Image (cartoon, rainbow, N blue to C red):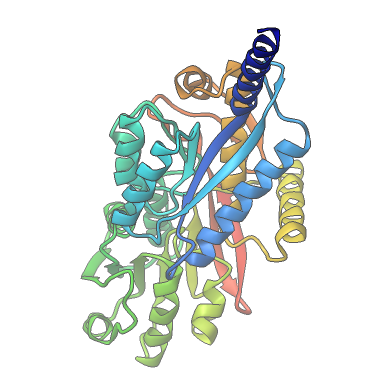
Amino acid sequence: MRSSTKLASFAIALACASSAHAQQVVKIGHVGPVSGPNSHLGKDNENAARMAIDELNAKGFTINGQRVTLQLLAEDDASDPKQGTAVAQKLVDARVNGVVGHLNSGTSVPASRIYHNAGMVQISPATTATLFTKQKFPGVFRVVANDAKLGGTLGKYAVETLKVKNIAVIDDRTTYGQGVAAEFARAAKGPGVRIVDKQFTTASATDFTAILTAIRAKKPDLIFFGGMDAVAGPMLKQISALGIDARFMGGDGMCTEALGRLAGPAVGEGKVVCAEAGGVKGGAQEQKMNDFRARFKQKTGIEVQLYAPYVYDAVMVMATAMQNAKSAEPARYLPELKKIRYEGVTGTIGFDPSGDILNGALTLYTYKGGKRTRMDVIR
């Protein structure tokens, strides 16, 4: 009888120990396109999420005085809305404590409803569609400026600084591409300024001869493209082959280090102007960003492509909110996210009541010698 009691007590102790151990694991989901045409951007983001979690674990991350282990659950949405919602549900079923992602607006927006219905927190490092936060989901946040600011700023820059008059607009029919192109066209106004043509393609297209031939007949000073670098690169090559003499402009989706490689000589010298939905300015903050880039390359062996710093900060912001709330439960740490002020590698992060970043920055770039070259950071 005594032996049975001891065994029972041991079993209970074991069960309690197992339960305590289970409570020490905090799961953070990450979703991005690690396959398909945008895989270089998705892998960039996933690497940054792993880097943040590895660093937090190495420092001995604690919540309410208890040591916890952060675990990354990474999923691939392939920039496809259907796959995006499927993996969102997979993360909900896995009971993750929060999600950093998605990359594309077209996947992030439909996935956000799934996270919202599950009472989960989602911080996107790259989604710019205005609809993302207009849904008024309390657990939705982004750490970059939205399309209204991105497209609007580019539209004003085209008219006021580049002094263009005749503009052609192309979008890739995605949520992101249409959104940023519409905001650009809305802002590109001025005496004598005309949108001479509007065309569209797809996010997987490779032949743009028909739409570019139609545009060539309108003799534009500038072509604006709402889409990603995987399409913008080949499009620039075909613009050059058709002898179209026009500047080329676009948003963050094409504003990558890879564009120079994808377009080759067709990227030109100062011909392309684009904007990244973020950026830092000032000696101390720029040094902080440069240090991150150096650590990222040392860890991964590759250069930052685009949004890795924002993914890294998104993970850190989520982890800090958990610490401030003394809980990894979304309902408990959500109020802390809403009032957070975090000094990250991408600058000061705080959110307005809709979940948009406060005072979001934009970085204007061009390309020289095939390399992305910063022009200015504006807020």
